[in-house]
Amino acid sequence: MSELEQFDNRTRIIQESVPGRQVTLAHVIASPDEILYEKLGLDPRIDYAKAAIGVSTVVPSETAIIMADIALKASGVTLGFVDRFSGSLIITGTVSEVLSAMEAMEDYVREKLGYTVCPITKT
Image (tube, rainbow, N blue to C red; front, side, top):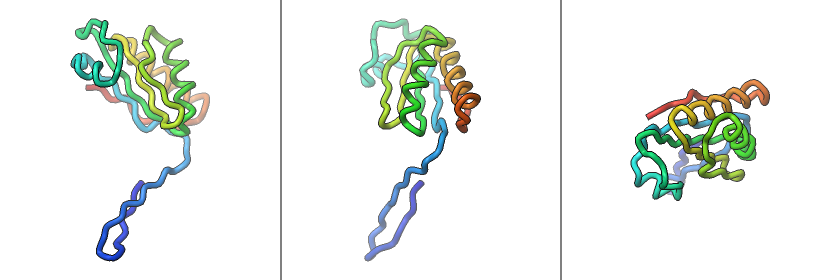
């Protein structure tokens, strides 16, 4: 959340992190362009016609570790990136593998950990 304050004719933005248990982003990029893999430092040796990238963020951020484990066990995805400090997670695989992994991650944190989850979106 952010709040605007007027101070000496200057605008200052205050950003706050609200503690909670929630998945704030769950998105699947189907058939991403090769340059996206390159820029993200992901394995470029894939069949781009069948490829997908899954991006997720979660708070508390350490939950990204649990979600990464669930994703790897749920389908044949590859772990592209996980950050226990920001709660960011990137997985790659086929569209069906990435969707299955995202659904498994969301189901687990919703049902077992009591998190609020956002809908999985796809482009």
